[in-house]
Amino acid sequence: MGTANVMMGNTLQMVLPTSRPGDMTRLAWVGILTTAIFLLDLFFPLGFAIWMLYLFPLWFTLQPHWQRLTIVHASLCTLLILTGFYWSPPGPITMAVVNRSVGVATVWGVALLGLRRQQAEGSLLTAHDELERRVRETTTDLIQSNEELREQARKRLRAEEALRESQEQFTSAFRDAAIGMALVSPDGHWLQVNRALCDIVGYTEQELLATNFQAITHPDDLDADLAYVKQLLAGEIPTYHMEKRYIHKLGEVAWIQLNVSLIRNLEGRPLYFIAQIQNVTDRHRVTAELRESEARLQGILDNSPTLIFLKDTAGRYLLVNREFEHIFHLTRKDIVGKTDAELFSPAQATAFRANDLKVLQANAPLQFEELALHNDGPHTSIVFKFPLHDEAGTPYAIGGITTDITDRTQAELALRESEEDLRQVLEEREQLSRDLHDNIIQTICAVGMGLEQCQHLMQESPTAAVHQLVQAIAGLNQVIRDVRGHLVSEHAEAPSNLEYVQRELTRLTQTVENVQGPQFRVTVNEGALHGLSQEVARQLMSITREAVSNSLKHSRASTVSVSLQEHGTRVRLAIDDDGVGFDPERRRARGHGLRNIAARTQQIGGTLQVMSQPQQGTHILVHFHREQSDVRT
Image (tube, rainbow, N blue to C red):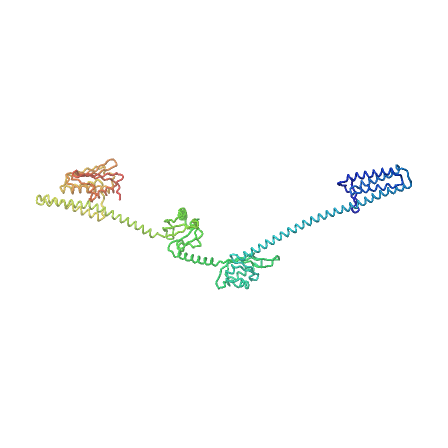
């Protein structure tokens, strides 16, 4: 075994031997045959061509991977042929030399020819292997290219399938779209239309394909549409959209929303327009009706004599009526979008906003009284504010209706002043009634009682009767003076409380004496009169006269006493008699005198106690604090 030299072109290459199955057996047979031939040559005499037998083992060594072994074996055979020449039995020498020389030449000729054949076979095998390698590489490249072509074919098939599906989807979407769709040539002719477009304009597909969009466009909208088309073809705009009108086959007007884009080829030349047409006739009708409704509502609001407004939740005005503009001398443009803080004084705006927030917090209508400054001064208004809600129930605006109540407020103020005047008149009338009852009527009653006695004295004692008449005349003159004092506001210099009380008690004492009534005792603490107002003193004397007059008329008492005393800061007036008495509850319900006494006690801020029982006399007590003795109305 060894390496082999292989000729590739003009280059001798070394081919490494490779071991194959059976090489060892072949090698053993070569050795056995060579040895047998050598031994045979030793037994035959010279002159025999025994050397020719060496060609057989040499032939066994002629293998592509045994090139060196072939040379070694040829050398060995040469050595054995030469050795046999010396050791073989004697024979013809010349023939032996010739035979041995021919044998050596034949062995090396066969060996060299075999080596040459082996080199040719090796070259052929190498070329064959290279060819197979190249075929394998080419086959691999062809297989890879084939796979790539198959993959490209699959991709193309998928692309074609996707394109077909896309075309089918486009066709289906185009045909079954809810809105009108059309393909339009650059000159305006319809190339393809769907059913929805036919329904919008009332034409069949064949009728539309026979005409162009200009034929069914409203004349007033055609110029604007063609201007957009010109810009689109010039590449100035990528798309355009507009609202325009089509003329329906029946002659009606159909409003549409038009959206148009342009498709170009690879060179950039226009191919066709894609138009999307949506029927908005109903929306236009609703919009027109809404505008008409808003105009009617605004007309109602503008002709309302009250102020009406609408704000958003942030306080910005959304709507006002003409009266609002007129009152505040602002235009609707100056008002809408602004807040109260931008239109009115800070105090006024703060008050308005506070009421708005109350409505939002309550989420219910509320009524407020608000003051606003107009050109002629402040005006008071009743403002009814209410929230407006969206579908979810969330407030999104605040409405307000304002009614000016300034005239009514002034009328109510005048009414209150009139009521106050009437109350004062009624109080004065009540006071006059009490004064007439306590002073004049009681004096007249006393004069009447004196005249009754005078009637009895006319026969018994004329002198006493004359004296009684003089007293009665003096009493009537006093009544006249008192009446004049109530009717004419003639106020002389007011006497002191002490002088006034002394004078009034003196008159009361004379009245009791004139009617020859009971024993009359008066006790007055001058300190009790200190610090009292003239009015309080007058009320005390009126209470005293009322009580004494009632005692004279009803009690049939033998003794009547009047006491005015001071007890610290309190003053006490007491009128007592030992007459027949009465039931205070029954008398208070019917008697005018007790009501007058109670009213006068209340006026000076005092407390009244009336204690009486049948046959046990009457005790009237009036208590009041000196510092609280101002007359109350």
